[in-house]
Amino acid sequence: MNITVNARHMDITEAIRAYAQDKAQKLQRYYDRIMSIEIIMDIEGGTPTVEVVTVATHNSTFVGRHRGEDMYGCIDNAIHKVEEQLRRHKDRLRGHKGGVSAEGQV
Image 1 (cartoon, helix red, strand yellow):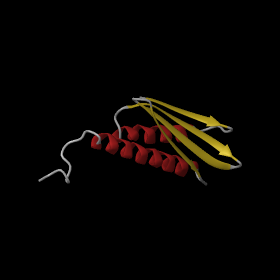
Image 2 (cartoon, rainbow, N blue to C red; image 1 turned 135 degrees about the vertical axis):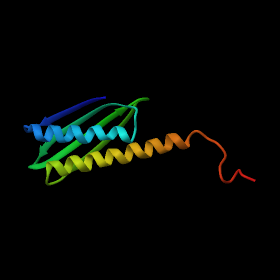
Image 3 (cartoon, rainbow, N blue to C red; image 1 turned 30 degrees about the vertical axis):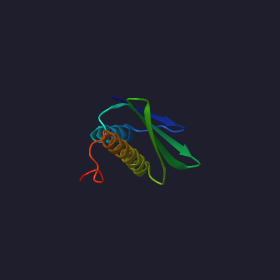
Image 4 (spheres, helix red, strand yellow; image 1 turned 60 degrees about the vertical axis):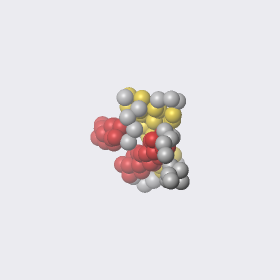
Protein backbone atom coordinates (compact mmCIF):
# COMPACT_ATOMS: atom_id res chain seq x y z
CA MET A 1 0.00 0.00 0.00
CA ASN A 2 1.43 3.37 -1.07
CA ILE A 3 0.91 6.35 1.21
CA THR A 4 1.65 9.78 -0.24
CA VAL A 5 1.51 13.00 1.79
CA ASN A 6 1.45 16.22 -0.26
CA ALA A 7 1.03 19.88 0.63
CA ARG A 8 -0.31 22.79 -1.38
CA HIS A 9 0.42 26.42 -0.55
CA MET A 10 2.34 25.43 2.59
CA ASP A 11 5.29 23.49 3.94
CA ILE A 12 4.61 20.55 6.23
CA THR A 13 6.81 19.45 9.07
CA GLU A 14 8.12 15.93 9.51
CA ALA A 15 5.92 15.56 12.60
CA ILE A 16 2.72 16.28 10.64
CA ARG A 17 3.86 13.99 7.80
CA ALA A 18 4.60 11.13 10.23
CA TYR A 19 1.27 11.68 12.03
CA ALA A 20 -0.68 11.54 8.76
CA GLN A 21 1.15 8.40 7.59
CA ASP A 22 0.55 6.69 10.93
CA LYS A 23 -3.18 7.47 10.77
CA ALA A 24 -3.39 6.32 7.14
CA GLN A 25 -1.73 2.98 8.00
CA LYS A 26 -4.67 2.20 10.28
CA LEU A 27 -7.15 2.37 7.39
CA GLN A 28 -6.10 -1.10 6.35
CA ARG A 29 -7.94 -2.45 9.43
CA TYR A 30 -11.25 -1.49 7.85
CA TYR A 31 -10.62 -2.75 4.31
CA ASP A 32 -7.68 -4.88 3.31
CA ARG A 33 -7.85 -4.23 -0.46
CA ILE A 34 -6.51 -0.68 -0.33
CA MET A 35 -3.95 -0.01 -3.03
CA SER A 36 -2.96 3.61 -2.35
CA ILE A 37 -3.71 6.53 -0.06
CA GLU A 38 -3.00 10.16 -0.91
CA ILE A 39 -3.24 12.82 1.77
CA ILE A 40 -3.36 16.39 0.48
CA MET A 41 -2.94 19.23 2.98
CA ASP A 42 -3.75 22.79 2.00
CA ILE A 43 -4.35 26.19 3.51
CA GLU A 44 -7.34 27.89 1.88
CA GLY A 45 -7.96 31.41 3.07
CA GLY A 46 -5.91 30.83 6.21
CA THR A 47 -7.90 27.71 7.17
CA PRO A 48 -6.28 24.26 7.09
CA THR A 49 -7.92 21.72 4.78
CA VAL A 50 -7.10 18.02 4.48
CA GLU A 51 -8.27 15.67 1.74
CA VAL A 52 -7.71 11.91 1.93
CA VAL A 53 -8.09 10.00 -1.36
CA THR A 54 -8.08 6.22 -0.97
CA VAL A 55 -7.99 3.92 -4.00
CA ALA A 56 -8.95 0.27 -3.54
CA THR A 57 -9.32 -2.69 -5.87
CA HIS A 58 -12.13 -2.88 -8.42
CA ASN A 59 -11.88 0.82 -9.19
CA SER A 60 -13.22 1.92 -5.80
CA THR A 61 -12.25 5.42 -4.68
CA PHE A 62 -13.07 6.89 -1.27
CA VAL A 63 -12.59 10.58 -0.50
CA GLY A 64 -12.74 12.36 2.85
CA ARG A 65 -12.31 16.12 3.22
CA HIS A 66 -12.25 18.25 6.31
CA ARG A 67 -11.68 21.93 6.92
CA GLY A 68 -11.07 23.22 10.43
CA GLU A 69 -8.91 25.16 12.82
CA ASP A 70 -6.14 22.63 13.51
CA MET A 71 -4.20 20.55 10.95
CA TYR A 72 -4.03 17.53 13.27
CA GLY A 73 -7.78 17.69 13.87
CA CYS A 74 -8.41 17.98 10.14
CA ILE A 75 -6.32 14.85 9.53
CA ASP A 76 -8.25 12.94 12.20
CA ASN A 77 -11.65 13.97 10.85
CA ALA A 78 -10.80 13.32 7.19
CA ILE A 79 -9.43 9.87 8.06
CA HIS A 80 -12.58 9.18 10.11
CA LYS A 81 -14.77 10.03 7.11
CA VAL A 82 -12.85 7.58 4.94
CA GLU A 83 -13.04 4.92 7.69
CA GLU A 84 -16.84 5.18 7.64
CA GLN A 85 -16.94 4.91 3.85
CA LEU A 86 -14.69 1.84 3.92
CA ARG A 87 -16.74 0.22 6.68
CA ARG A 88 -20.01 0.77 4.78
CA HIS A 89 -18.44 -0.50 1.54
CA LYS A 90 -17.22 -3.67 3.23
CA ASP A 91 -20.65 -4.24 4.81
CA ARG A 92 -22.27 -3.91 1.38
CA LEU A 93 -19.83 -6.42 -0.09
CA ARG A 94 -20.43 -8.91 2.72
CA GLY A 95 -24.21 -8.56 2.44
CA HIS A 96 -24.09 -9.06 -1.32
CA LYS A 97 -23.22 -12.75 -1.13
CA GLY A 98 -26.80 -13.89 -0.68
CA GLY A 99 -28.00 -16.71 1.49
CA VAL A 100 -31.25 -17.28 3.32
CA SER A 101 -32.96 -14.12 4.48
CA ALA A 102 -35.11 -13.86 7.58
CA GLU A 103 -38.23 -13.60 5.42
CA GLY A 104 -37.38 -16.74 3.46
CA GLN A 105 -37.22 -18.99 6.52
CA VAL A 106 -40.20 -21.23 7.22
